[in-house]
Image (cartoon, rainbow, N blue to C red):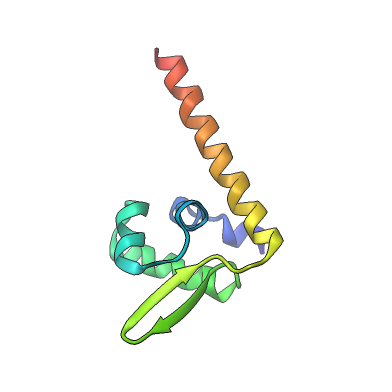
Length: 95
């Protein structure tokens, strides 16, 4: 299952964004992830199917968040930390 969860850069970005910023609607998620609306929705649907992301409806708005599950939270945190480390490492090499 982990290979399916981490099988695309968009899925990884979704997990990182939800870990860093918390619950949000699809418009904000698309903006922060930087992928197309279609790609984000498609990858989000798969993450929901695997139980790695939760969705809840408030009126007409649908909100997405990471579940209150220690393993998912730690996975998202590790991905965010690795992403930050890689970005700073690349910046240092280019300096």
